[in-house]
Amino acid sequence: MQPIRVAPTSSQADEWALVLTAVGIPNAIEPDAGGWAVLAAADDATRAHAALAAYDEERRVETPRVSVAPEPYPWMSGVALGLLLLWLFSITGGAAARAVWFEDGALIAGRVLAGEWWRAVTALTLHVDVVHVAGNALAVAVLLPPLVQRFGAGAALWLLLLAGALGNVVAAMTHDPRHLAVGASTAAFGAVGVLVALRLIPREAPGSRKRWTAPVAGVVLLVTLGAARDADLAAHVFGFVAGVLVGFVAGVMLRRRPGPVIQSMVGALAAVTLALCWRLALRG
Image 1 (cartoon, rainbow, N blue to C red):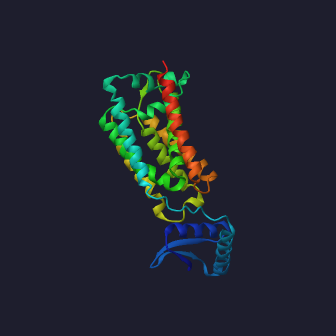
Image 2: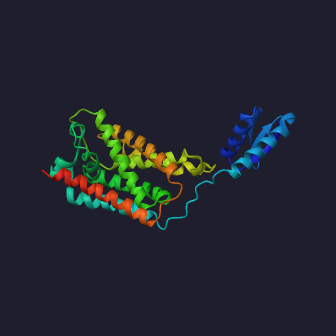
Image 3: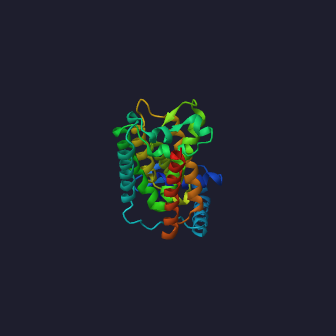
């Protein structure tokens, strides 16, 4: 077999090899001094070159991959959300205080399924103790900035809230009616799910191993933070799944990051939703 093309990355070589396989040309991939060589038999060389050239031309006329201009200081949004969780904890206190916040706002599976849906949202803002809230504050500080870079601050916050709430609702369906849970980790796992979903959309992820850096880092971080003895595994899993679903839909529908006006409106919607849920929780 002889080299047809040399790719700078293994992902690009795999892509070219798949093209050749699709047109019935046997091929192989081998490491090369310049990267990764895609090989084919000498008799198939002409066909292979023609197939790859046609593929290149087809990609040139396709809708271009989403190009996202840099968001200024996206890390600030993550730090701000982390600080917000810490500030809320300073108001609500931990579970040991048995404050009204936990009685009215914690996720109790049976009550959520009985119609108190707002608990799926309010529970995201409550934490058991300092270690619990510090871990989740760190998680969202790390995971929110990549979402802000792609969707903008307002949209990213809404996706985080939506994934966390959906994950909590589904988790409630799997638990005993007396099961109680609190914490923002469901939303944090949702953020990881959104990041993974974006890597499943071709135009979002150019051929590079680095495209998995953020999701892998997030999974490692959250597995570490979520490995505590009392961690709610179901909420973590369903938060991740919810994040994948909402992330895929958002990634497909939003080809570009919405403008400042839309960001402000969606961010305000997230804030109003949280405030409304607490209003419903404390109305008694």
